[in-house]
Length: 415
Image: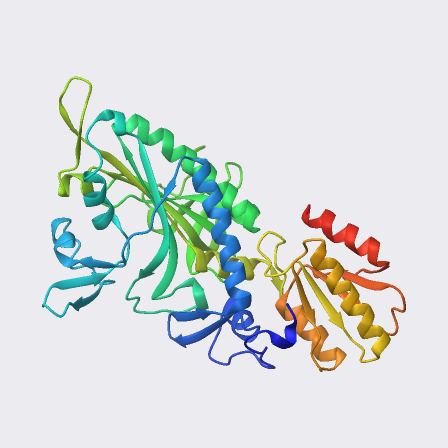
């Protein structure tokens, strides 16, 4: 992609109204555009990152047996009345032209259970794991911190259906491992911890995945020995002790919740009379679980964790482009070398952003720091017949031939 043709131009200054690092960098770098509080457009650079996060999540959900579907965002209020969730304060309410009361989906239990009821009859149909990656709407009173807390956002929600608690527990553990894989692959795994939280009306505990960062809105208490944590809302009940090893040597940390998993028991299956016929011909309630990840929240957290004072440092798995080629000279010979390099990288299967703009070297280098693509390639009169390679997270420069560049880039991304 030629940067001169890229839709939306990088801002010279960060947005004044934004406080969080992710919002500042993502808005200034034109990854996202703010329409209003809690509502954002994903621009071409941001959309590429979002789709890579989405694909990682999809691969891990498929690996644990998930089948992908796509459900409506417009829900009948009557379904929420059945589950006694029609009064929750995050719902957006509206009416159809005929006067039917509707809500915008904040999650999909009220949709997926009636759907599954049409298709499940026997124990032979279980277990079942269905997920989607779809937009959600929540009327947050304080939408803030960029895409970490939005009113409209994209979420992966998976729902599991089981014949008993033992089968559910087995899958619940598999999902925990899948989530660890996701957060490792997107570049935040080393600072993301399974965190015990209140189970509410469903069970004693649910679990969150919390990423430690000074930008976090949540407080967790981390057992560094067991590598698990307890949410602040639960810590008093846990007597300020690790729920695994009972140690009281817990460290208070600020964190961002990047995912959650809940035992639902039979709350929603009971509300819609969702049952199955067991081997003896008896009707039994179906045990459920739900598992969520907000894609924008993950993206914002990746930026909070992987950035410096100059901009973003994208992990190679979710970077919008794999190489950022900068032409720092207008001399025809130099430009010809840059075009040759651009073509060669593309033929090699490398995703390249080529900065061919008529801007100063200083502007291009500053913008490259802000955008944060892992590998930067610089061509100018000073580099002569070589190309300067620099990793975004490393000040060391290398002068390499085109063949050496192709080898280094393809090996880094294992293309």
